[in-house]
Amino acid sequence: MKPGMNSNLRRRVVVEIDLDALVRNYRRIVSHVKPMDVLCVLKANAYGLGVGAYAKALIGAGCRSFGVAEPYEALELLKIVKASKSKDRVDVQILSSVLPDEIGPMVRAGVILPVTDLDEAKLISAAAARAKTTARVHLKLDTGMGRLGILAKDAVETALQVKALPNLDCEGIFSHCPMAYEPKDPFTRRQIALFKSIVAELARRGMTFRRVHIAASDAINNFPETAKAPFTTVRTGINLHGSFDPNGRRALKVESVLTLKTRIAQVRTLPAGTTLGYGRTWCLSAPTRVATISAGYADGLPLALTNRGFVFIGGKRCKIIGRISMDYTTVDVSDVPDAKAGDDVICFGRCGRDSITPDDWAAVKGTHAYDIICTLGSRVERVPTSRP
Image 1 (cartoon, rainbow, N blue to C red):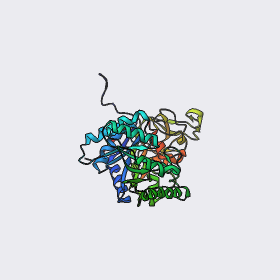
Image 2: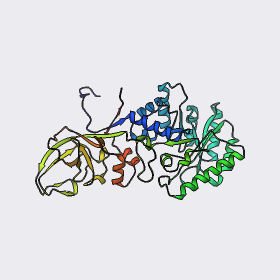
Image 3: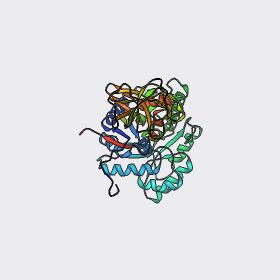
Image 4: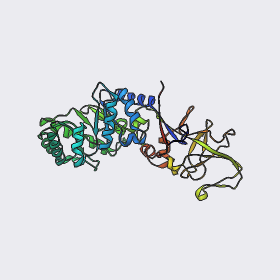
């Protein structure tokens, strides 16, 4: 804070993160997939919500395995793990890829690395030899995602060649499903069968793994066989936040951990015939009390909510009217006669027995909750909350 600035000045838009609900979600997932290990995916700064608070809460709840997408995320998590002073080992694993110049630092840091081809494995082996250590790796198979990994047709022979390299601990093998959000889609079951056949063939040829995983949040909900032997581990990301893909089952009884809040900037009674916002997409048919709230698409409100979405003001659902702009949104507060400037607004979250969730916004936008959560704006303050 610069000298002279008021340190008590409130941010106009905040997202509150209920860490108690996060821990409850984690424990429900652990219970649902028992005896599987649960790897918590906290990539992209915990989907933009602040990895520090998430990781500390989850370590306190017993999580001992985290997944990220790239090295800087891994290093940030390692700092948090060290600061936690956990008596148990807490693993940090890169799930996507590692570039040649990143391998040395990651090996020295003790990050678990993916192996996406034989050349990468050789580089990791050489880096581990130079560092006089053993690098822990998971073989990443492409069984149908088409993005990264060892092709299924090459998996057995490549895995055996990787196993023969020095200074590697091939502790794990994993893959990823592009269609696991569709419980009736046969592609995922074919993927699972293919992956299991590769693991079985490798076992017949003397190569076994302590960690075997293909399930992320969608598969946990829609394909329960991915949380049974020969699998040992599941990965969870979006379900930790209490959100789901809009398709598929919701087998996990998790709750939303997020509440997005702002405040009213002004309330006016506008005459019939007044048009609201860019493009004049809403015309008032009668005199109407309209509140302008201090949040817009720069804060993460999807444009798709224009004339369709709702917020909570004064305990009541209030319709968004007029096009959402960058910094402000206009709302019909005819049913909230006491609404005034400075009053709180819940954009999504719980209000009494009612709620609006990121999943609801995703349904309106035609996307999924990841998109909603990851696009909360940079000026939205992230506020972790927990009961003492």
